[in-house]
Image 1: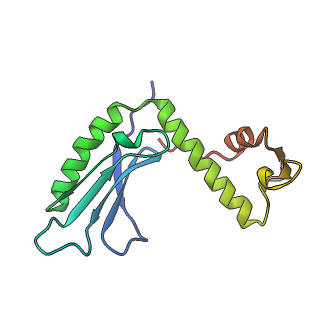
Image 2: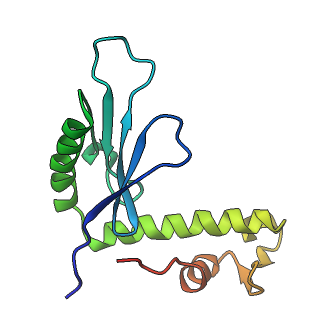
Length: 150
């Protein structure tokens, strides 16, 4: 049986205000961040829980809190409910979408066209494999999916 991942958080190095990215294994499931530009006397922290694709946006939760610890507590409670509704298929949908978008950015960074951008529907992947519209996703998932980190 596979071990259940734990929630981990790391500081977002690209954010201007204090922001924590929350991971569940290799999937980002949320964020806790200091609010900026809010009126004096309003809660200073915000949080959001959920991921897409792979879950219905109606299942996502968000809120605000006075302190980081309160935001973390509210996030963890909401995330527990959110994750209880997820299946491994939900996570796989998210991972495949993430792999596709990373692959697409890598293709464009190399100046290559996607199969959907050429008239005959065939192109060469940045890894050298010949691919077409019909086998593009299978190729991406077989050759370019990130290894699971859990």
